[in-house]
Length: 86
Image (cartoon, rainbow, N blue to C red; front, side, top):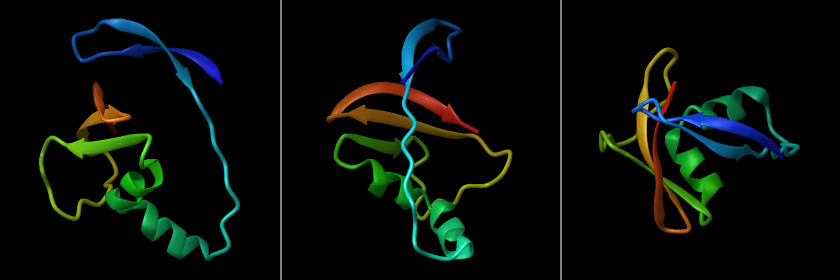
């Protein structure tokens, strides 16, 4: 764990922690990359401790380079923070 400063949309800064988790995956890099491009993969990996809901309510979203994504983050079912992910 690493302590970090989190910057909110209104320029407020709060303290937080950064957690890094790693896994060994037994599949081709291409298949794994295609799954990572699917937002549903993020949602599935984070359940049940965290859930993400898109503010855009898009169905079947795919990550794109240089596009901003706005989510509501729920930790154990409570709204924690709205975050822009680039």
